[in-house]
Image (cartoon, rainbow, N blue to C red; front, top):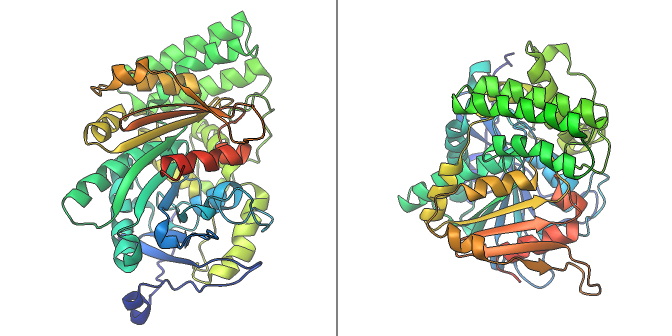
Amino acid sequence: MELAPRSCPVPLLLLLLGLSTGAVISWPTKEGKEVWDYVTVRKDAHMFWWLYYATSPSKNFSELPLVMWLQGGPGGSSTGFGNFEEIGPLDRDLKPRRTTWLQSASLLFVDNPVGTGFSYVNKSDAYTKDLAMVASDMMVLLKTFFECHKEFQTIPFYIFSESYGGKMAAGIALELYKVTRKMTLFCSFLVASLGFSWVRPVDSVLSWGPYLYSMSLLDDQGLAEVSRVAEQVLDAINKRLYKEATELWGKAEMVIEQNTDGVNFYNILTKATPTSTVKSSLEFTQSHIVHLFQHHVRHLQQDALSQLMNGPIRKKLKIIPEDCSWGGQAASVFLNMEGDFMKPVISIVDELLEAGVNVTVYNGQLDLIVDTMGQEAWVRKLKWAELPKFSQLKWKPLHSDPKTSETSAFVKSHKNLAFYWILRAGHMVPSDQGDMALQMMRLVTQQE
């Protein structure tokens, strides 16, 4: 599907001042400073970003870090879901969020890959196909951002991510490390934080059966069925048949749904909610991709959130092209990345660790799609020289509420690798355990 060409010219004066075309608006309640804009990262490919300056009552934004949040999918919107459902200053009802990360950091939400959220492409061949393209596009955006907002060049910069965003964060972090070393992009990059990261997805698939069985959500027969299809996924991965592995991944999910009476892949203690069907205009032909899109992107674009983004938020931003709707190209983003879904990127994490880049892994106890057992499995496959010492360490408990002795998480950290086990949380930790997520961010950014 192709969209008509469009352009969003930025006045020269605004560029010289390092300001966005988005105005600072006190709406609907008193808000801090925020700016937003588009960056054309390639011909026919336009990426949208939205920045909130930190609003700490005791510190200026210049004394606090800058956090970039990357959503999963691929095709999930950071400026929508991450912002209004997880860590931004306002929730979906435009009410102040008590656990917003904005109180301890400036927040940069980016709709990536192109075609996600308010980002868009003019031509169908402009979508990203793999992680390398995703990282390349982000380098263009970040170079433009830091050149226009020089006040952030010396502020500690952290990448936090969720789900497939964790895989993208790894690739982006490595490329960012390289370009900052070459002095072609100026920023103070410190940490890649990989939440529920799709680093080696087959490890999650292989652990789905044992995990659900241990939680009394599979019987012996169901475990055998799930294990059989998981082995098929592994076989396809070993043969580097990644599109076939993606199709088998979808098959494995359907086998689980049939045997668990529709367990929720994002929190096993809840029931999966029915999703509306993909419109025919999305031009899908592969049924397994339709199923996967429904599972992993549609839940990030719930009707209420879509109405908010395409209504009041669109009106506030003022720069969204008329023929661009929030999330309107998400299905095409997902489809074009099909061959990349199941590719492992453990080697990229190894490169980050060997380069001395701080890597933080965190996971929710009740998540299935990227379950903790799977995360632990790929971490054990790292070739990092310090891994044996990391593995021998005992984890430490964390308590988000000092008034109680209830354990909120466990953490293990050695040199530049840390792992957080977040209790009573599913796939969206900031939504399920907002206090613990905020505390973790402060720990990672060395504020506690």
